[in-house]
Amino acid sequence: MRFQIEDKVLDTVTGIVTSADSEHSIRAKTLQVLNYLIEHKTDIVSKQAVIDAVWDDVVVQDQVLTQSIKEIRDLLGAKVIKTYSRKGYQWVAPLLPETIQTVAAQVTEPQSTIQARPVIDKSKVWIGASLVVFLLLIMVFVFLFSRSEPPLKVAFLPVQNDVQDSVHTWVPLRGQEQLSIGLSQSSQLDIIDTDHVLYAIERLTTEQRQAYQAGALYPLQEKLDADLIVATRLTGFPEDFQLHYQLQTPFGVEQGIEFASSVDEVLEQLVSKIATRFDEYQPSRSNKNISQFSNEAFARGVAKYLEQDFDAAKPLLQTALSTEPNLLAAKRYLAASFANTGQVTEAIALLKENISRASTQPEQGRELLRAYLMIGYLQINWPQLMNRESELLSAEQYIEKAKQLAEQQQDQLFIAYAHEELGKIKRLQGEFAESANYLKAALKYHQQFQGDYGQTAALIELAKVSNAQQNQVLAEQYLQQAFDIATQSDAPANQVWVLLAKADIARSRLLNSRAEQFAKEAKHIATQSDNPMLVARVEAWFNDAPVYTVN
Image (cartoon, rainbow, N blue to C red; front, side, top):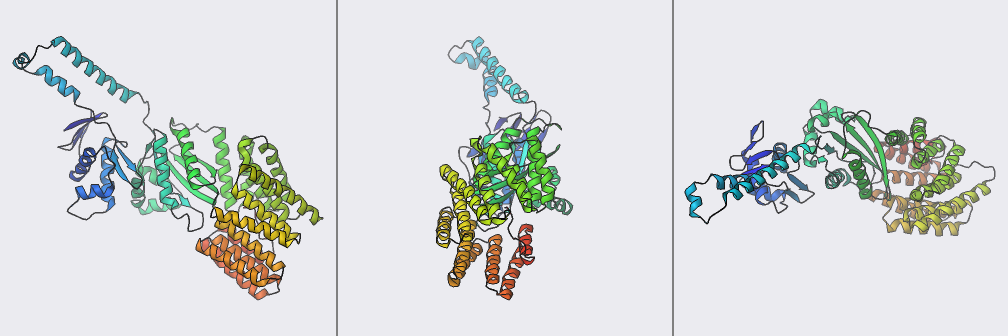
């Protein structure tokens, strides 16, 4: 049979695809795949069902089918077949009825045949045929000329997972698939199938692979013939994730960050941003507005921050704020950069500015929470006043305010954080029973949403309280429980924190050789994880410097 598919004619018997200026033949197996999908166009067919139907006599890998799907899309258009995550494929392109052929047959029938039938008004037949032809011509014209530019071809790379635990090992491929499916459903952009992207990565030459592994995206841009390559990196903690993204077009690179409490939510936010940003995209070297420039400076500043290069992060974050003063997350990272380089007074001043701005912007509720919490955290861990008792009371006021706001917003994560910090304050004030109550409440909140990171921190603090009460057995039990959780979730950062807490407690009991042994174990794990922040914290312990940084 012959079908009209957009501006091409497909012969499903001969496997010939004809357009205005070319003619192509479809491989035999690929033609079988095509016919199978068309025959079952009302269904989503699994990969295995297609393989069983087409390659029933041999054992083949999924990649063989993926290649056939790619060939069909290359010949007939990327949107003729839709991919459904973990379900399979479905033919979705309309197959134009052979209306013209039917009308033509009526018009060119022998006169004798027509006379043998009931009398038909020939003028009406001709008018009907003319109308059908006219309508079809309009449809073709609209299809060919309604878009001045073809839709952008977009490829998502696997998500780089920098959340160091075993819980989020699914992120690279499932995250890539979720982004691709989400954008295909929310825009008219031409999304390159994830199987095709992975296959292209596998087929990079040695030279191309080296460039790609060094961070260059142009090898894949060439291989996929993509207009937009999206590279992403997930960082942060459960309930507090950051998705760093890099958008590579032929005209430059754009960077940014999305924040959300879940992985699904942060991926959805990026899909929304790309759909809004590029669905009506017209390539131009001057397409960046002030907000995009600010977001890129912010993203680069955060990247430097995560590399522990706080001095390099500061000017980038300040640049972002110079064009976008309400980018409160950038000011928060700038405050953290100041704090981590010993400029705590400047950091607190910036955070107070965030409190002032966020108080008048309801959508900045979490930034308001963070600002109160961070000021209290800085006053707890970096004493600045001669009167320590007064400073701890000030910290308690800020943390209490954060707790109240978190309860109003029903933000379970920050309720837990506030309880944890209040527990620290009470420990430093010598009120151990009250401290333990706060910390146990924090632990309970973290357990409710499976916050392994928070559970570890609360257990470490409980161990410190027990140590201050001279209950060494209970302290060791808390630390062992914390280390077991860190090990089960494969979180090296938490393992390091537990080992440094063990080292601190051993040193407080004048067990210096044992303390050094724990610290060396922490250093080994930090080095193996290749995390500069962890390495810096362990080195600080050996140098008798504060191991805390603003995370």
